[in-house]
Length: 130
Image (tube, rainbow, N blue to C red; front, side, top):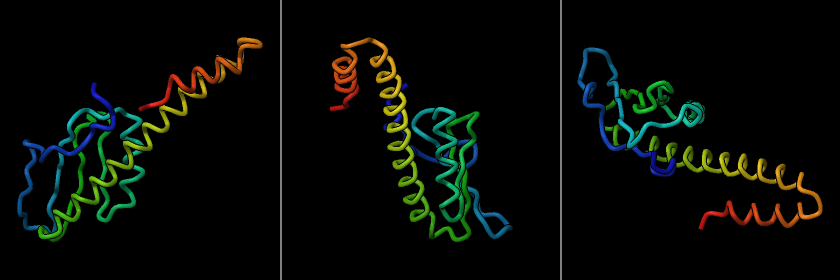
């Protein structure tokens, strides 16, 4: 799998294209560039509650973002909101991974006696992303 930061919308789900219906809404299914991890999906679903209309992703499939809209003219604006949430989710997810790694490294380094502080420093520097 490529980097989490590469997750983005790449199109519409081929199996469920938007269609005008008798109901006063249009279902939208956006396909992601790669399968998102389950915990990323959980994070995205939390962020998706703050979009109107709400968006969600099924964490079992991890590939399709589902939403709906009432006015088809608002689809581009709604898509931009979703893309912003994906970007934010990517950033938060990467930060959580970094913090988990750092905590594990610090814990391991602190168990190594007098050299623990130097090991801590070495491990922190090793996790930096340039």
